Amino acid sequence: MQIFDAHTHINAPQFKDDIPDVITRAHALDVTAMLVLADSPASNARLRELLALDDHIYGALGCHPETALDYGPEWEELLLTTMQNPRYKAVGEIGLDYYHDVPHDVQKRIFIRQLELAQELHRPVVIHTRDALADTYDIMQAIQPQDGVIMHSFNGDAHWAEKFLACGYYLSFSGVVTFANAPEVREAALITPADRLLVETDAPYLAPIPMRGAMNEPGFTRYTLEFLAQIRETTATTLAAQTFANTKRILKINE
Image: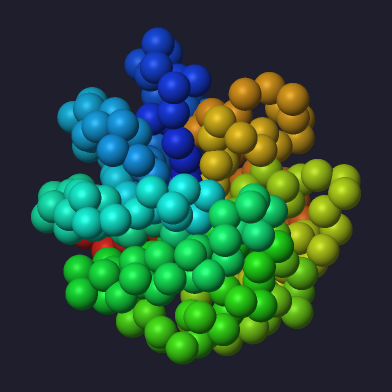
């Protein structure tokens, strides 16, 4: 069995002294590939170091909505230069986050700009949306991304899942789907077609049951995968193969 963690941040400071062991533990749990996302020049520098460690670590870069006020010409130049490296497979995570107090108009402007750049770069986008599903949907309907969309750590209900799925997007489920207080996310996972489903950790955040409360890491993708397999009445092996293939497809990984 091979599992692909479709969204992780092992370039975060929490992992700085533990990377080889994190990768070893992931492999022990059959997590053999991962997409690592950078959201700043510093985290991108750490990501470049990670890419040299393992051929099955892939990169993404984007300005997170929480730091949209930092976006400017230097950020844009970093994004354009970085994407010349073929190991960077996506622009993200980008989107809208209304939980934080960054002005909504600024978030929307930076989100739209990065969607446009992703089109120019022919890269899929990884979307972060928090308390902003309607505005996220409206912007993406207006822009119509052509190179693929991953809805990261999808936290909407079945209604929103249907709307995003109708656009051809992929839904990626994190440990949130295992939480007792997230029945609506489980409903969304149940209606997601097998060929549009991804699994992720969002490490070091959102550790799934039975590891909730611990610092999340890529190996824990396995627990979310096993939970999804159980509620979808399939086997972990089958779902691992499907989600692995899905992640390679959306990221245009040809091996």
